[in-house]
Image (cartoon, rainbow, N blue to C red):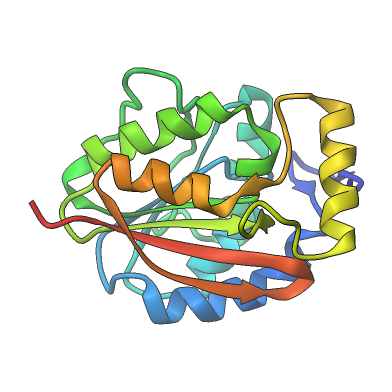
Length: 212
């Protein structure tokens, strides 16, 4: 796992962020809506959302995380990049909460989740889909990034070793089978649009809310 480096202010630096932000950004430029608010679940340090906000115009970004101790890092990254007009103050969101208390949810046009599915219990993901179904309008986007098994098989030896290491840390963690994610999405009224291979044996998985 990557070492977390403290900045002079509240910013936390996850070095892995700089390794995947470019390919994710290029995909976002193609798939994200041209207006509205993008909610990020599990924003972590805040590095991803500040990078995307700096490089994509005309969108409002709403960061969040389940860890209250990391919210100051998100706010500090926003301030350091002078992006207060594009990035809203971070919210404390555990997806298992019954209400996410999102202001102006009517403007919500997409939810993005980067590197969460494999480091969270499955009930975090099931709750996420339930809330996303309630919050997102028809044809809105739900995006996941991370490692996945295909047909219940690992796509690389490194992913298999990573899966084993995750389960040693927490038996409820692990690289998920993509079909399980798709089945859950279908149950909650989302359709799979596409999957996109990404660097380091990761994958972007793009769903859209079915038209009511």
